[in-house]
Length: 355
Image 1 (tube, rainbow, N blue to C red):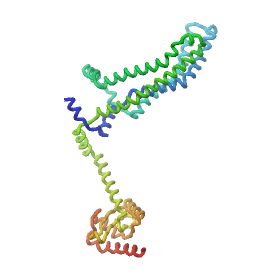
Image 2 (image 1 turned 90 degrees about the vertical axis):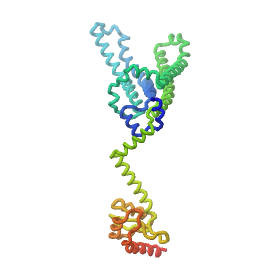
Image 3 (image 1 turned 180 degrees about the vertical axis):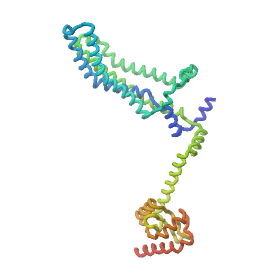
Image 4 (image 1 turned 120 degrees about the vertical axis):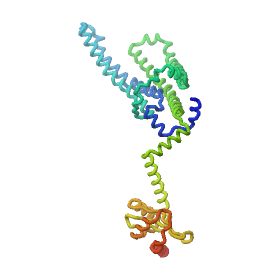
């Protein structure tokens, strides 16, 4: 039954489904992205802050190492010294640790933005159910994650060995040189290792993020019946109904405004009403109202008419009467024939005189 149910889910998740699962805290995310960002943070911290921290620690410890006889070694004095050193070292490490935590949070935000999901904080007893845990252990996702983890360890180990092996062949050289030189070499080696691991982790993160996005979409797929039911529920939502109504009005208005350039004349109030009439003696038995509106819409009709050189005639009584009596794409009623004929005749005479 589970396989049949899964096979029936052939439709991509709708926007509403994705919003619902996001509210529950379920989003596509890759842990490898977080690991990559945190490694980059570690690289920045080591590359920029480690020398400064080492210098500060040297200043703190050097007096005690160079002149230990100058420091009293009583229990109380030693405790005070260790407390001061611990406090100073804590302050020095606070900045890189803070950076490390910040980039870890940034790694999550870069994938799914700011997300607050109280449901994720609630206890889920399925996670401690041994049967559910056993099923998760042998799921496709768990197998893929296991293979990915093994490959990651192998690749990172190979990269680290490639970098370390030349240096491990000559340990006597490292032992013979000055301590500060050795420390500098170790620092340079650490930076190179971090850079190499960052490159490897970055490549893994790209592929893992693509896989997680794909798998998340597959997990959220819907059956055709679920899509139909969702559409029915949305149509019953007053907010959705209002939005649909607004879109219909907007599209109807856009279609109406597109007809204004084809009008023969625009009759105005002059500011509060405007109606656009179209008349062709050869193909029409009576003029047709192609656009009408009040206030803002009336102004837009006049602007479009002016842009397209459609004649505009001021006739307040006729404009108000036609606006009230005639719908868009309807012929004007016979009781307005005479008044409209006078306007159209006037426009035709103007065009004839202009020629």
